[in-house]
Length: 229
Image (cartoon, rainbow, N blue to C red; front, side, top):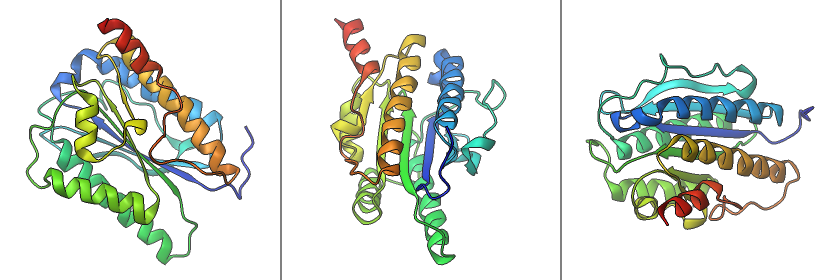
């Protein structure tokens, strides 16, 4: 796809759980992320990516910092190696803080506003945070949604994904549960890819996007429901 240089840029802030419990789907996360980036790149280079992985040894391991999507290097078994616990609150708060600084710097220097999509991919509940609590995270998310028009997306393989996302303040329509399996992880990234394309297309056409209803389809969740029944 040829990208119009005047297109609004979408900035993907992607937060990936790297705790030990992700080991069983590590190769699927790697493959899913790489395919997501390849597909989004083909859709146009009017996008930037910040990728952060987190675990209890490092709640904010910045792998990519605001690079154009054309420049993203693939993940592999050396750059994504699950370990430790799940400081989800700290990881979320730290990446929101980084994003707000990034966007404030753009405003100061006169650069165009970016369309922000903040994606969290996890398989479990918070268990290791020290700096941020749930109330603070809910406040930060609401501020970013209301004051800066950020869109928050939550993909979870936890037993009660909706409850987890709800505690953060992420709406049902922007949350999707998936099975912690190869097929489930593949479908989760595929669904994210499809709906990101829809989001970016709407932004290019200057159409309304609903922060509370990011997912127009939930293929991974439909499959998880079938598996459970």
